[in-house]
Image (cartoon, helix red, strand yellow):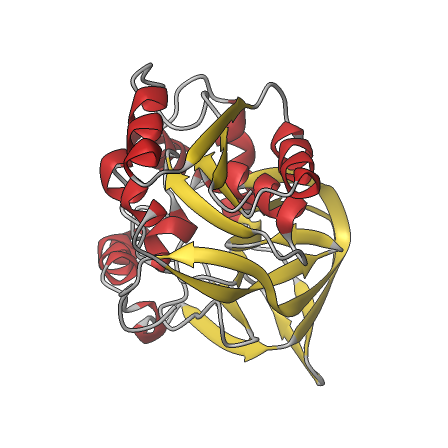
Length: 298
């Protein structure tokens, strides 16, 4: 089984699916004397089932092809196992892949079959559900719900929804316990970050690491329209920590309570409202394939 690789593909991620994908995968595998098994997801949660099947069958490597939601589902099937997980990015934002330095083009990402290192990556548990990238409450969760229901994908659609919904969405009251300290805040967004970015290089947690055994808790207040351009510039230039509207803390455990149920998202996938959250970090619980020189930090 050492030369076998399983690929789990979500054809509906991102902006479209090319029929040449299978050929590219098979070609790259053949050049490395690897045997490829290609499977496709059919419904929500199917990628987790396929990943568990691959792990039980003894595949040493499993690649997820899709967006952060697909990556999350595959990770659910591989967390706390010895199986190495890889990512072929095909989503709208590809937040975790970009953080890890994985190329977003298929041909470049497939080079990870032959040139790579394996890291023991942290994962988060959000109300006992797995999160590998960024989960959150508030405006981003509201947009995630709208985006998941929208017929079109991509950065343009996401940006359009943000502009449409921004003015009407209100801040909310929250009581937070960050490790052993209590805070009261009135945020617009609360993000629980394992990696640094939502996707498309929008880095809400500039110094987050998937190997530091910490949650980066990002509390964002609503930005006045007059300050929106400067705020966006900070978001996309790794300078969020310099914004007066952002507070970032690091912790191993975060608990949050609200006066009424709040919608939330896990790695961009919307979840039903709840009035309390508990977030913990699970150190080194996922074996992840990354480039052999991924950058300054992971």
